[in-house]
Length: 591
Image 1 (tube, rainbow, N blue to C red):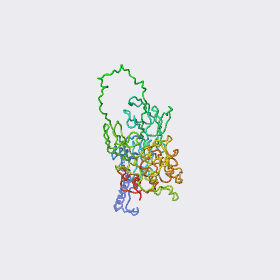
Image 2 (cartoon, one colour; image 1 turned 45 degrees about the vertical axis):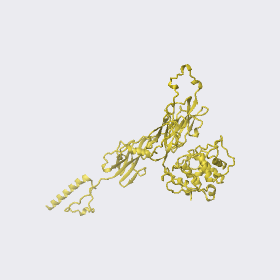
Image 3 (tube, rainbow, N blue to C red; image 1 turned 180 degrees about the vertical axis):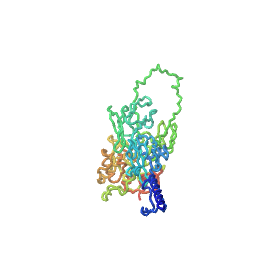
Image 4 (cartoon, rainbow, N blue to C red; image 1 turned 90 degrees about the horizontal axis):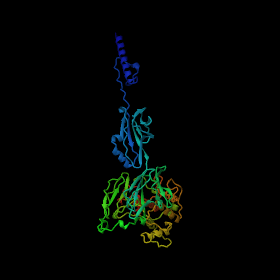
């Protein structure tokens, strides 16, 4: 009987193990201390098995819209937080798909698709976990598994975070602003937007009395002087290796021949060109009227000698995406009220500019026409000034290459601003150099003469710089004192100064891409090789207008004046400005 009881217990135990094994598998149980089967005692209770836990892994999916700060803000406004950041858990996966976020419309760009790594994400299929790795569905029925070799992916134990990135196609646009004269927008067709392969066509404007429209010329760019825009031909853009955009402008030369010229390459995909009307006189015979058809009538209102009501003009403001947008001002030969400065994420406001965007608008001038002012900004970047120990001038050449000067060489304005992005003229630069060279009181020897500076406030300093051999005039005998100086021109002044001092700079080729065929190539290379100028994305932009902040940086180098951290001095140069120390150093005396 005792044996039968033991047999029944063994049979019962065996049956239980078979059933449990069929449910959990042969290796489902771990007996504490791993007892040897030979030590099994049927009279003792079975050890409690450890129930297997399902693997719990988490993946967080984030989205990078791949835009500037303004675009990121628009993206964030369009999408809820649970769309911008999606979390998947392996225990709750259950056929879950990634939700595709919305993207904003961006001027100059076209959205193509979202990608993980280099593959386009397929939002119609589910995320899966396989072999301990997450697999993101991509087009053509494929998957891309998570890997730290892919941008934006981090793996920390059971937690994975990936970044899905927006892919955009560049679609540059060209904004044309039409002007009837120096200040007035040509209404009603004042602004036109062109895409690649489009032409201007006919522009309807109201001509002045006894004038007819001959055509349009590019305003504010000497490269296009002497040419008229061919409004029937298409504008074509080109991209270089760094995605800098230039436009081929269709032109007609003075002989009636068609040609094209390229605009200066720029990083932005949206560009503004100002076009100015070319008027010609209407043939006098066209205006002869038959007196019989136009009898004089004293009762005709057209012949009334009473003065007409003074005309009103509307001044509008284009903030170019900034906030707040000022209300239009209706004025009659009055001064406009300068509105509140707009703000734009990722950019610093410079000022209000008229059509050519070269000089800030002077709100002290009365308004005598209807036109629009456009806000101009400067993109905030992470570029930093060259460090002092990067000033590559040997001890033996120091006295030749460096000018000893300890006083401020460029000052702020009475209203407490500095105007870091304001341009500087040839006359202003002549005065600055005369000051740091100590020749502002030097007698003139009469060897330099220019046809257009008599009585100009900077006449003597212009002549001193010319006699010193640092500045030249133009072939027609003029100097153009109020013309904006370019960045390449200041490199020429310094190169000539070095030549006068018998210093031979290092003009070896550099990484700068946009000077290879430029007349100032050796000068720019020399200043860059000796640490006097900065570049951004391998470009110097030699034909860009010289800004006051550029002068501060370059002349601090030329006078070997280390940049110091002064208290904030100018309202428009906050401590976050990338040349804060350089500007304040230039505007103060050196110790």
